[in-house]
Every structure is written in C-alpha cells, then in structure tokens.
Length: 147
Image 1 (cartoon, rainbow, N blue to C red):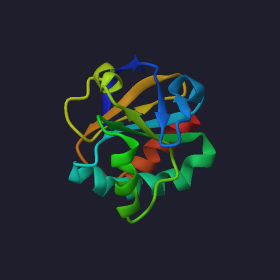
Image 2: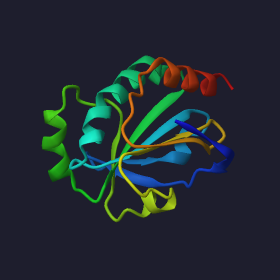
Image 3: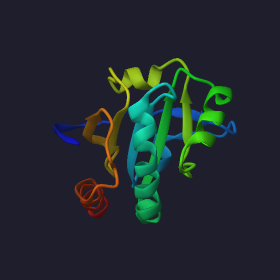
C-alpha cells in the first residue's frame, strides 16, 4: 500500500448491503476502515477477498472495519459469487450501483483499496490485488489503530 503524501478527507457515503441495510462511513469514525472497491468479474478481487477476511477476523474487534464496495452489480449477481469463495466474508458487502462512491474516491481500476484513519482521512491507497494479511500490511493497520 502506498502512503499518500498528505492525508485527504475520505468522502462520506451511505450504501446498502445484500440485506438492504445501510452502512455509512461516517458511522465508523474513530475506527480504521479498509474500503475495497471490487467486482465479481475481477480475478484479483477474488484472490484478495480471503486475505481481507483474515485481517478482519484478526483485527475487527480492535477498532478496524472492512467495507467491500461492489461496483455496478446487484445482490442477485453477487450472492452466488460469494458462495463460490473459499471463505464467505463476515464484513459488510455494499453496492455502489452507479459508481458514484468509486468516482468520489478516484477509482480508475479494480480492485482499489484505501485505508481511512480514525480521523476520517484517506492515508493509504493500493491499486491491484494484494495480500492484506501480509505482516507488513497488518503492522501498518495496527499502527493506524494505535494512533
């Protein structure tokens, strides 16, 4: 993940999950939030989903949240895809059906992931697939939680 030269305010958003419940980024202020933009047709997105679940399981109760923001698709498209994954994610899977949230974050390719610090600022960005449970990434998130 690349640290931004200057943190920038994370655009707030409210999106629905597969159950129709809404989730807002602003409700998570005070936690470190990984926002991952993805789609079912994206092979690197599929590859990195298990590592996001692993890091969420390890740090989720310690002031860390993951929001997986699907692009352009519907629950009817995403639900069967989730059942095909090795690990079903326990973090919220949200729907950005018109890509307005991705546009606000300047997403140009999938997957794109940002880390939002406890003050609601984007501090890190990664474009392309990652192993989010890598020791370096875990240490980075742990440092942000401690700040």
